[in-house]
Length: 73
Image (cartoon, helix red, strand yellow):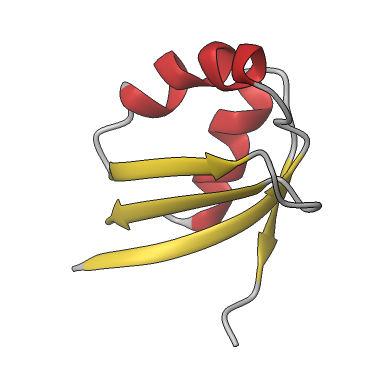
């Protein structure tokens, strides 16, 4: 079942997005993702299917950035 997760990140420009892209695109459990670099929190929104928030954070960390889950309201 597809689920949407949000993370506060330090991915803050097009170059950062380009660096993290191959890491997120290669993960089978990630259906779609987007980073709002214009927001103060640099929000990463990820649609996942069968992957945990901790796994998404680990993938982003592997790319050299941090991703802290924003709890659903």
